[in-house]
Length: 168
Image (cartoon, rainbow, N blue to C red; front, side, top):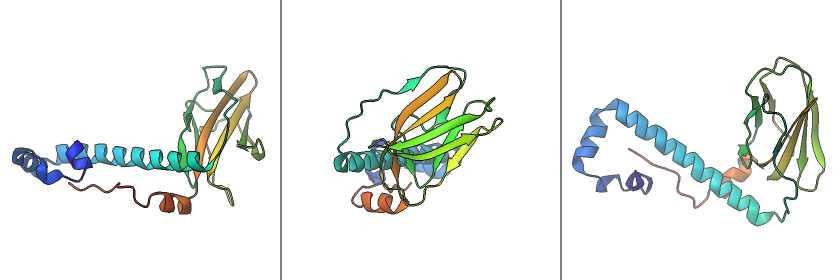
């Protein structure tokens, strides 16, 4: 796997190359793993770029007060590129407040999500790449986490010099 990630597939044993050429199932699994690794490298590069350009002291701690409502995405320190998708584990039973703040505590989003929804998608206009946090409130439940937001344009510039192209 490491050799494929380092673009050294030709250094793999010939039997393995032959097997990958003939087994679509194995080739599919390897492709999936490579795409996952590519996404992880991209997110790591974006987080490093944002951290290098942002001086922020994260004084607030990630919080979940009630475990019946759980957020699937974004989790703590997730990277959101272009669009921020909030996904819940169950349909919301009550009106749910969602707030997004930037690292200076300026509120940039304040919405109520109606009952029955399992997702809320926010495509920001004129939002800068940086560290943000969200607060989700519903009666006795509060969910709070930091996340990274990156514009699609900034993603392209941050990825210059980062090798994320693999081939089988």
